[in-house]
Length: 171
Figure: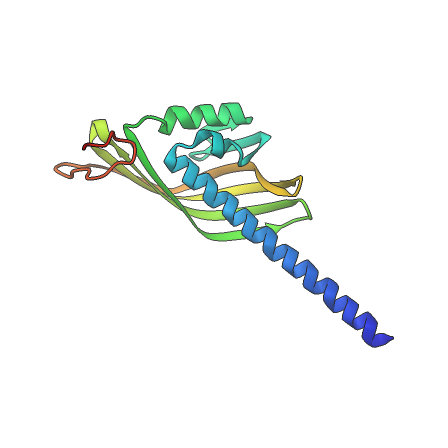
């Protein structure tokens, strides 16, 4: 009988660990989707990443918004122009599952912009601080925002842009 109880306890522990690993992977995929949609200007798909009352705190809190409409409006205004190309990457995820339906995460982020009409590039490194909630079995962003480690800008001089997914194709 003790062997059966021990086996059941081991099975429950294994199920808990597998569920936690699946949650961590789902949260990582969510953040990667956020960055991909941001760079590809996929605003409708990006909106799916958030709960309706989500909040943001970008650039050390300088740009803070509540609700999907306000968040997406800011992002479209800031990065929606075909004159602005962006690249965001999230690294070194530190994710803590805090309950069956909540989690927190810290991400190191590298980002770069090319502002075509001004021939300027920027590069920055940030630390994102996120909160996640699981709604109907799916992880969503409740809060996201970052604190800057540094940002730099450079005149692109004679540097030429050779490819741009938003530029009209030349045949």
